[in-house]
Structure formats: structure tokens, C-alpha cells
Picture 1 (tube, rainbow, N blue to C red):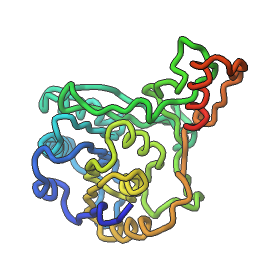
Picture 2: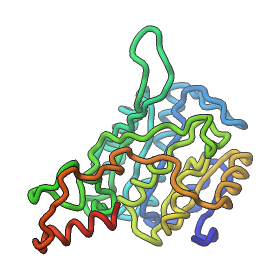
Picture 3: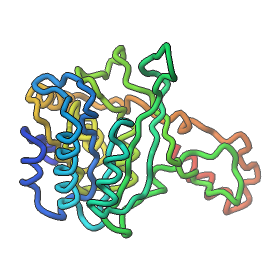
Length: 277
């Protein structure tokens, strides 16, 4: 995709939102700082409780404003503030709740007392009840072929398994919170169409922009750190060799493939399955 369709804007998220026309964005994928004190170079992710909630309310109000009526927002958040963000989206912004997604990963911080965290939460809200959702673009191959099942695959559900981008991964960028590309790919495919506008108000390492570049979406990224903007631009110029992660279920091959190809319905669905795998 032409990089002219990928825009990176430098500055404060709240101020940059004001440059975006109302009801002009099809999809927002937001991975805001979790307020855990992480070092993001020219800023630290540490506000007092009320200040952080006020900041969240301001940018989420702007997010709702710029979304089209058919638009969707996904918001990543840690457990300390996820319930508060739910309240802002549901009660204060009066958006429509769709899913509370759990991103499960196999590697994470270890604990000697208590259970080690192995997931992040992602809220999915829509601006109205009439929203884009392309289920056929994100189906998971079935374990078994059964005519009562959709032969093209199953709904991925609301528990997603994608590995972290480990620090030893050659595609790991110098950013403390890089998200897996295939995780973002699922959101983009499900909730937007080609040539739609996707907005990432906390661009970070540029994963959303990189995915949109490959999926023929227009994308706008906001980023406050000029060093990360350099990183993103460099990433977008690299040749694309495949996504840096994938849902392990995508490798499924049903273990009872239909043998009677004289059955036209089975043959058609089998051909669709093979071509999409």
C-alpha cells in the first residue's frame, strides 16, 4: 500500500484529535498507557488516579466524536483501570458494548507470591447497533468438518491467544509495549473494510499502521515521542515478510476431511477452506 495513505502526526493526543473531522473514522484501535509508571522516553506513564481518569474521559469523548455511526473502538487496558474505562464508554459516552476480549499470552512477568499475570483486557464498543463486522474474514478453521458447522470456520470467540513479541524476536522494536501484529490484524479485518480510515491515537511502535499498510487501509497514528515516530517510519519502509505472530488455531487442518467429493456442497466448502488456509 502507498505510504501516503499512512499518516503519523506528532503531538498530544487530545490536541491531535481536534484536527480530525467528526464522524470521519471507521475504526479506532487504542492502546493507551496503562498508568503503570513505564518510561516512554520523553514522558512517563504515571498520573494520579483522578488525573488519569480525566485524561481517559477526554480522549474517549473525542474518539466517540470522530467515529462514524457504523464505527467501532477497541481499547487495550490493564486490570487497574479497565472497569473505569468500561464505565466511561458505557455510561458517560453511551456507546454500545459488544465484547470484553481477553488476550492470553504464554509469557509474562513472574510472581513468587500470587498468580503470574498472563492476559490483557480489550474492550470493544460500537457507536451504534449498525456496525461493520466481517466475520468471514477472521474465522478459525474447525477441528472437524460437520455440516451443522460453518465449513469456513468458527467465530474466534472472546479469548485470543497470541504470543508476546519477545525481546529476542528480530521484529521487536525498541518500545516497551509492542503488540503482536496478528492480534491487530484480527481487529482491522473484523471491523473495517479496504480503504476505510483507521485511527490509532497512541501509535507507539507503529503496529496498527504497519498492519493497515498491508491490509489496504488508510491509517492515522498519533504519537507524542519523536523518537518513536522515527522508529515507525523505519518500520514502514522495511519489506513485509509475514506477520510476527499468529493465533495457533489458524494452523488447524480438520482431521476428518470429507472424502466424498461427489457431494457438491461439501466440495464447495472444502475448496473454500483450502483456499483460505
